[in-house]
Length: 258
Image (cartoon, rainbow, N blue to C red; front, side, top):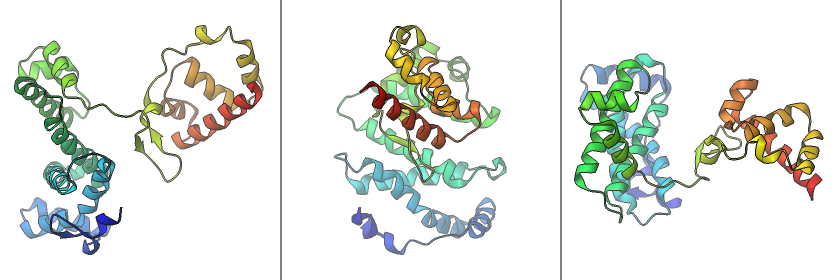
């Protein structure tokens, strides 16, 4: 991705400033007091977040300059709405905002057209969800959103579903420097319950040969339908460790069954 180091929308990305944690804190305090110069410096100091997000869409047919501009809008919205009292890193808050802004743009320009009324309903619901989440510090239900904007829950569900962009099960959603967490790792496997597997005696025999912890992980993942994150929370290790142990266990089972 060498193109990201030259110029996008007139910005020489090789010369973007790097802000220390202390500088970010000091600038944000000034921003809260209405300092426009501090706000400008903070935006420039976080443009790399925008670049990191739009790299995910490098395989699309969209113009990168356009995506960069849209991503900058998401960055500015994140700065304007960031609450420093929540003890959350700005980047943690900003990346989903930038990503959401880019995806909204791509939805609006998608070849599969969604009616204006559906988009309006969906955007009202999304705005209400964001406001209610900030107000109550938890994700609101569809009915709570419906009461907030005066639209039926069925219409909101239909509108939100209509504007969704298909996502690959293999799209990485998080990495801690080790094995990435993919979308598929966050999806419960409801079809592969124990009643569908118990007749496969060779598979059960392969599981018996696993160490206790790996067998427990396989049981929770594929018999109980839990996500890697849920497994990690239950046995008190990181998601990355669960991922590695799961892969080792499946590899051992494949070797036995071969």
